Length: 152
Image (tube, rainbow, N blue to C red; front, side, top):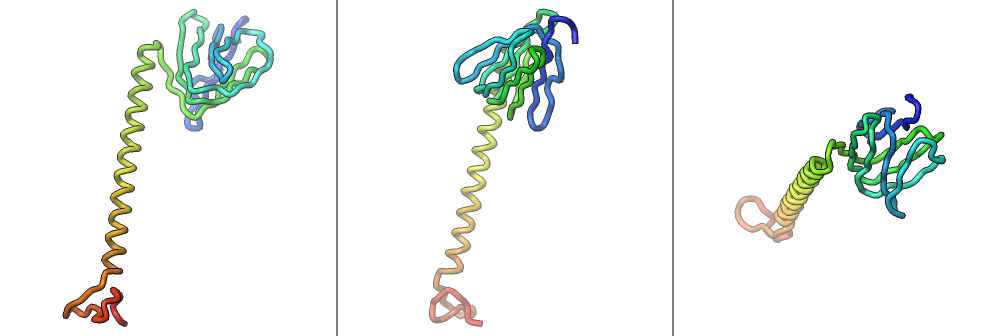
């Protein structure tokens, strides 16, 4: 680690997005509001809200990562770790906004398709039950008593 730098790790269950990246400072948000972390910060743990984590890298370039909740941990005043369900990194706020909106639109469309498929499956199951339970008549071997079940 270079002198005067924090090490940032951001991980989701499926991927480590940043692993011990040297940074100068970090801003994040929890239920109490926005806060900043610099080298030497006291040990700290908090639950993040769905928000944008911002940090300044060693090259003084700001970086961003949208997180869907998560836990932020500061250890030894030099290590910042974030574990979250979803992370979307970006180089600019404008670009990150486009990525987040696109991801959410894709998720909404997938949820809509799943609901439609579920309704179709439910309707098909109801139709099959009604076909079985409906009284059948006729000379095709159906139960003449009309109970819906064919006698064995």
